[in-house]
Image (cartoon, helix red, strand yellow):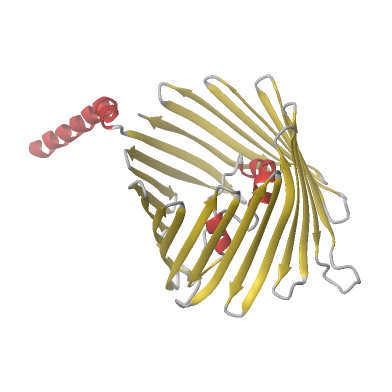
Length: 391
C-alpha cells in the first residue's frame, strides 16, 4: 500500500512539473496547446434535467496539429471526436475520427498542391445504420481544382459511395455564400455548427460528380455548377452578378435548375457596405407546388443590417414569409472591452418574444472563463459554463 501511495505521489508530482514547465520548453519547440472544459445544464421536461461535459484538448507544433473533444452526460460516455493534421508543405495529411457514442465516422484525407493544381483524396469509413443496427460502408471522394491568374477557377469532385459533394467546395453557390455572410453569422453566433460533410451511402459505386467553373473579371462574378449522378445530369446552379470594391456593392442572381432544365429556385442578393454599415437583402422565388402558368413564385424575403457604435457591434435580421408577412426578427449585440466579451442574441416571431441567448467571457493570463445561457418564453433551454487554458 505504501509503495502504491508513493508511486501515486510521484506521478502527481511529475504532472505538476510538466504543467509548470510546459510553456518554457514548449515555446522553444514552437509548441502551443489548449485545454478546455464545458459543463452544460439542459432541462428535460416535465421535471428532470441532464448535465453534460465536453473536454477539449488541442496541440499544435510545427507541421502538426491535434484536436480532441470528449463528451459525457448523466448516462455516461456520449461521444468522442479526434482530428489531426500533418503539413508537409506541398502535401497535407489529415484524419477525422468520431464516436457518437459508438463508431460513427473515420475520414483520412490527402491533399497535394503541384504547380497551382490541388488534388485531394478522402477515404471515408462510416456507420450508415443506427446504434441498434449498425451498417458500415465506405466512400471515396476525389477532388481536383485550380485557380488561374486571369480570374478563372475550375473544380471537379467525384464521389464513389458518397453524395452531397458540394460540401467539399464549401456550398452549392460560392459567391452567394460569401454575400450572405450576415445571415450565417446571426444563425451560428450562439449555436455554432460543424461544417457539413458528404453523405456516405450503401454500396461502393459511382454516386455523384460535380463540376464547377468560376469567373471574376472587371467586377463581374459568375459561376456554373453541374451535378451528375448515375442517371446523368441531375442539377445545375448558375450565378451571375457584379461586385465593386469602392463603394463595396454587390448584386447577384442565382438560378437552380433540375436535370430537365426546369427552374426550381431563383435568388436575388444585394450586398452593400458603405461608411461602416453593411446591408444584405435576399429575395427568393421557388417552383410552385401546384400547376400555374408562372414558373416560380415569391417564396420569402430576408434583410440584414450590421453597424458599429463605438465598440458595440449590432446586427439585425428580419425575415418575411412567402406572403410577405413578418416571420422572425433576430437582433445580435456583441462587444469586447478587454478582457470581457459579451454577446446577446434576441429573437422575436409573429407571436412576440421567442428566445434569448447570452454569452459572456473573460480572458486573462492565457485563461478564458465563459458562460452561456439560452432561454425561451417557456423557460430555460440551456445553461453552460467552462474554461479554456492556452499555453
